Amino acid sequence: MSLASVGLRTLVRREILRYVRRPWNTFLPPAITNALYFVVFGVILGGRISATGGIPYILFILPGLVVLGATSDAFQNASFTIFHGRWNEYIHEVQTSPLSYVEMVFAYVTASALRGIVIAVMVAVVGAVFTNLDGSIPPVSLAHPIYVVAFVLVITILFAGFGVMGGLWARDFDYLTVMNQFIIRPLVFFGAVFYPLSALPDFWQTVSLLNPMVYMVDGVRYGFLGVADIDPNVSLAVLVGAAVAVIGTDIVLFQRGYGLTE
Image (cartoon, rainbow, N blue to C red; front, side, top):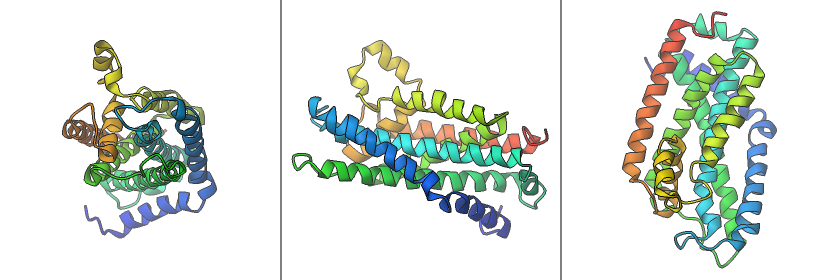
């Protein structure tokens, strides 16, 4: 596979333009939603919640909201574009193109992961604005920027890969809503976004480790704040392994024509 192939670059460009041309549908809603999260949980409730591990609450929830925005949009973009292509039968043009199955998956995942990264940056900027409104709270900074970049990159690729699976599996648009609202978001909210893992009893801490979101939130929190309940290298290794497995599964599904030949 050549990363510079015309077909690959064309498909990536098409997928990126699909959401860039509609910023009011793709970028504005998560910006408004996360502004509300910061107002309600960070400003209103955060002022009544004591510092978590010495960290102001609004700063503590920032990494989790970054993960929520990045994963939701990466998943939503990939699942929607695959399903929409199936629904309107223009995905067959991609199937009959000279692109390899690896290139097809790479293009969809790349474009969707990029959207997730853009949303992650937007959420971080919104969070920085709200923290700066209170002079008593230190400004947002990156304790370990390399870890922030690594985790955001891996989690957006992982959920873009999940989105490809979801788009192939969905039978109608309701399936997409169910997956995002009733599977992805609950996992995030129970992934230590609004509370430290160490605050749970030992049994529930162990159960929480089965939730992949815990590793994502904890890893991004380490990158932003320098604190973590799990070794960030372990979290990153788990997520990289999951991403490789998911992308590999996507390629196999494309090869077998799963959901594409109906």
